[in-house]
Length: 156
Image 1 (cartoon, one colour):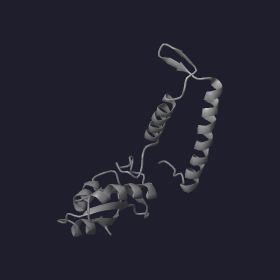
Image 2 (cartoon, helix red, strand yellow):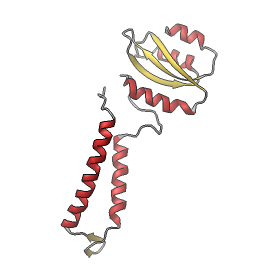
Image 3 (cartoon, one colour):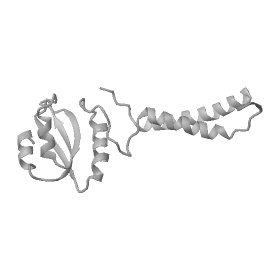
Image 4 (cartoon, helix red, strand yellow):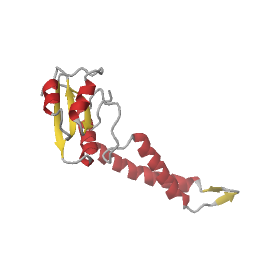
């Protein structure tokens, strides 16, 4: 729908939507969400986003917006979306690494140690290598399965 037509049609409507700004080449350049779509689209008109039309999906509740917005950002990978909205659908790679590090610390905290000096506990290098091999083998199989199910998108 042409931008001006979209603004006119939804001018006084309070409707939850995920919208896509479309360039003249038909490329989705931005995905956003709003409960007041006309006002939000109008605010984009003065930005650096060069778009000529708008597409939108409407939802009954605001709860559905973040999930659908995140899914569409992942699908279209628009150049003007620099962050993923907070949702349960995606997590930053850094957060995933932090969580995994925390999990490894929690798991290894209860390992039996073989030597202790002060507050420092030691395990044998051979037991550490066995543990690392188990984690590595399991992780490699799991990560390979995850990577096979997904596809890596190019960062813009």
